[in-house]
Image (tube, rainbow, N blue to C red; front, side, top):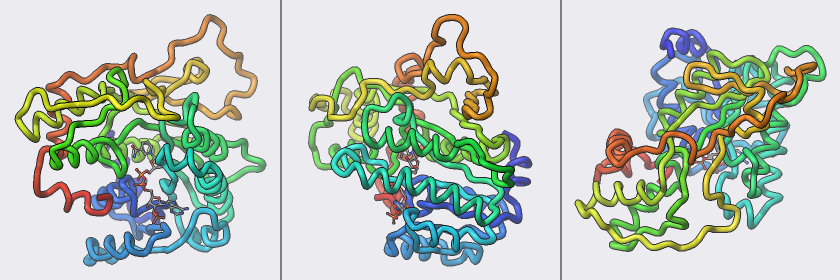
Length: 346
Ligand SMILES: NC(=O)c1ccc[n+]([C@@H]2O[C@H](COP(=O)([O-])OP(=O)(O)OC[C@H]3O[C@@H](n4cnc5c(N)ncnc54)[C@H](OP(=O)(O)O)[C@@H]3O)[C@@H](O)[C@H]2O)c1
């Protein structure tokens, strides 16, 4: 992607990141510093995470911290005044928590998204880019179901001409984000425990936080109202990921693993583009673009058979060497610095 185009989209803009203290939020705030936005507003609930981030960015005068909850429409309306661009990353994203408290997921992931949409329209924000997940495709758990409705709320048919464009992006597992398997496997290695694998055949799409931010910048530059962008990405067997990580940390080829069984709401393989979406998706430079339904008025459905869906067991599976390279480049073999790099998410 052309850096100048990204710079043109961000320079001089007032940008707000909901969930700006999270894994993704922390990374996008770091990367936004490369450009020259007029201001970056970080909206989230917990003041301790905001305080830690204030210390980290003590010498960045363009950062503003806003305590707020996406469930609170009035607070969003106030916070969005004067904002040009919103990145909506606030979410409940842990599958087991959402299973235990489904309505909390409804309130944050669906009502929260609808509040963001309405507040953005109200405040005349130019663009909202909302972050979604492969778990929203053919969802089998509450988290995925709530994120599927989040996508639909964001990309719903406009009731009148509007100046705000709404774009979604969807991606797979981010290496090392809060609650993900890589930090868990590292902890298990350092505690001398076996690595817990739910199912030996399980595969997941994998990307780094930097690649997630790249996709979001892509959608900022090229996204039009009603677009959902998916980046093509490789996947890995979780058991291979665990083995390569443990080998890099301990030098042992056969670090022990135990199978704990698939958890409720967990799929063996994830889907990034379903067959229902594939017939209307367009491929564009390593990405799929899935237009919202309202943009397809009058278009016929699939004419011949179902198009193949894009799944974590049908995409390229990373080899051991590629996994090692990915973990290495993302700093997961470093012993000391990892906690400071990820202190906001540890
Ligand atoms: N991590 C992944 O592997 C992955 C993969 C695909 C998609 N995604 C999507 O990417 C987005 C960001 O995920 P992440 O990994 O950065 O999650 P995260 O590390 O858990 O961060 C979530 C952020 O949202 C904030 N938040 C939660 N509830 C909120 C509420 N009601 N109001 C305002 N802020 C709230 C949290 O701060 P407070 O708790 O202080 O409010 C935190 O800043 C999510 O939409 C997620 O679904 C993540």
